Image 1 (spheres, rainbow, N blue to C red):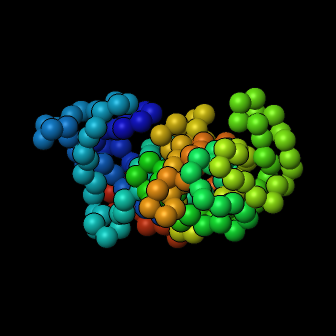
Image 2 (cartoon, helix red, strand yellow; image 1 turned 180 degrees about the vertical axis):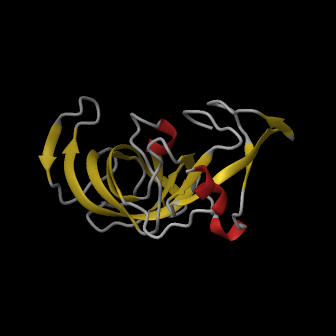
Image 3 (cartoon, rainbow, N blue to C red; image 1 turned 60 degrees about the horizontal axis):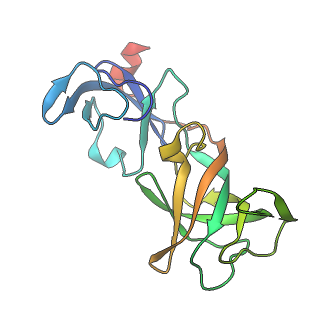
Length: 193
């Protein structure tokens, strides 16, 4: 659990799908809890949701308090650490962010910056190579949930994986979110509205 609390009876929304349901119970080490707090590692049961409706990397949040949503795209500050060549627009590695592993496209290299001072060195560089840092606009190839590092650090930092190794790391500075369309709302959640 990250920010906030999780309690039985609460209505949660799973991003990126927007599936909304009620929490039946919350447990830690097979003991029922009346509430879970930030830092707690808990399991929780939800009503009327099939196993196939949930996947690794989904994020549950309070449906009444700015719930997490799918990212349409995001801007990140990236440091290239271990890539044998050059990285340019269109590069599509796998991003490891919280529990998701999803391919993303480096849609636009926006700036190259000095990794110590953060000062801009070049606008729209053609490529980034080992030791370089820059701001990159990224587009996930599949539905993915991320947040800015400043708001939710665990959902805002990532490793870039390619060729079976970490080639870069980054932090998310800004996220453009999608609204879920036609998301399933269980009967239990409808009663709670």
